[in-house]
Image (cartoon, rainbow, N blue to C red; front, side):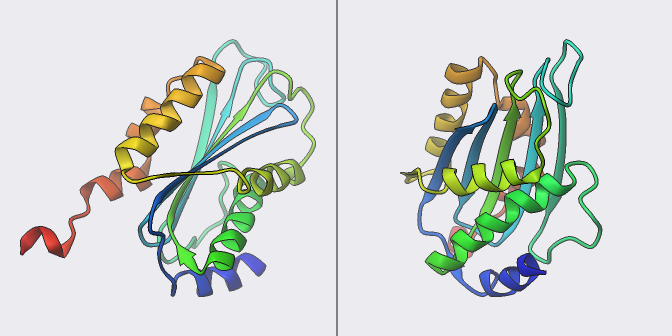
Length: 181
């Protein structure tokens, strides 16, 4: 309910001015939060590395959920409570700065997260991450920096995530009125 109330407010704010990246490590979870100056939309990718609490296999597993400007009409079954636990502190952050943005969250569960502790870990991790902002002047700089952190920290290439992201695809396809004048 709180998320829906905040979403009503955030959708009326002006866009974020810069591209922003946030990063946090907490209790075996790694987070990259990418904010794009655009209308509200939200996408969560959860990656479960081999040996993490949700993945006993030898391959990386992934799940994702997305919402556009109008919000969700159905429960986020793929990422479940983690989706809403990540979205709420982001909405609170955007409300506090009176801006809206398109937001991609990448959560990586590492093998050191061997016991699922509940969605409070997601909520607290995202809140901590939002205190560590890096600003960029372009989408390319933001994406390149996120890729670099992911490769250095986890030897993981985010390229496939960026290619499959509904949110990033939408931003890449959008045209501004200024392009026609």
